[in-house]
Length: 134
Image (cartoon, rainbow, N blue to C red; front, side, top):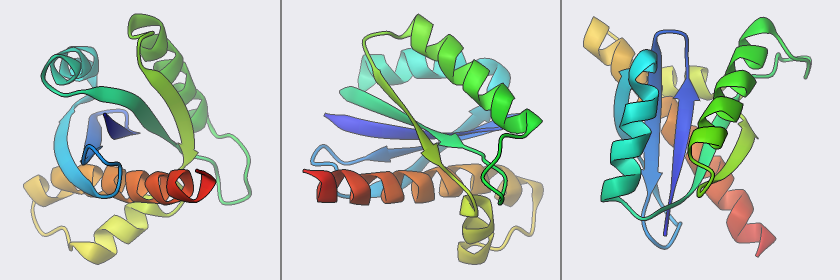
């Protein structure tokens, strides 16, 4: 079974997907956030997805911002639509900064794609934790 990570934003949502062993993560696709439900529906029809990890955008001080609240509400909505999937909130602080350090964004397309790179960073961190936890 595979794990997916989502970097949910107001306009764009980046996604990343693991291999079936849960060892590696790769950027998958960036979609409009308004199309996220249909994207997940299609994804779980085509891939054996067990878990979806949602980047949890805490502030650097560890508190919840307005964006944090929006992401939690969206995650709760998606969880109610797709109850067969295990849903996890995962700290994503600095993932966007790490993504921009990995691949500089020179064009609008690069900026859009960077959301999936950030999701891959979130997923990599989650998979590392999950492998240690076993």
